[in-house]
Image (cartoon, rainbow over all chains, first blue to last red; front, top):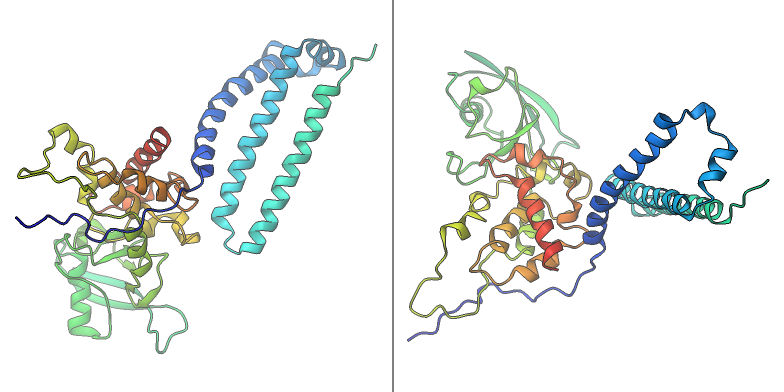
Length: 131
Length: 231
């Protein structure tokens, strides 16, 4: 009996690719869900249960006496920065076809995000209540 | 009824860019857009160039932009679109002449996903059997006729021609979810690349453009999930 050929047009299997886009896509979904929870909680505390007009140094300092609220604020900062940066990265990739201009724009985006992240983290971690 | 046609023409030998030309044709409301193009080509202006082969929505040769939307000229009736009718070549692929575009970049992406059954196991004297449920997983994507209406309606493809495009992902889906196939891992490896399935921004243009009614965006999302779960 003639042997059946099943390898028509077979190509070399591709090399192991990077998982960056896959995890980036998944991260957007998870961080998006978490951000809805965090941001809604934040909004209720700052704008519904309290009036923004009454928010002062004392209010923030009292919140940050507990590591819980510091962690909450840091999570909100980090997730929104990462989520937003990745979103803008995707927009820049889609809309700037010139590679050198794209690199420049991406560089500006990453450095701005990094500065905000360092500043925000520094404030949250190093904050000491003044009497 | 009198129909006014506005066609974006391009002659590579004389034009630097495309220009509009206007034609008036007599047509029945039940005639197809393709019939109008035939009337122009056969009786008014023989230089008008466009592709068509079966003329019955099967071969996928005559995808074009009709009144701003990607359609098959042989599948749309005069009464279904507003008059005057504006016809352009599909976007995102290089125009060769008039309504004819270079399909090579599209076909290259298609070939990348290995659109054929991969299975080295000898089935013996029997067929490779499948349950009805198994077939249903990929039945929708078997309807693809490679007309490129989806890929050339995709805003990501317009700006980033390195994007593999919805049609290639649809054809990968057809085999990735086929229980007889064993090449899924290789296909998903290609599709998780920066220009693969994750480049899709779920604009849904592809789904509304598909003349065969394939749920293209859903198929792309299926592929993304499969890549995540079976990576």
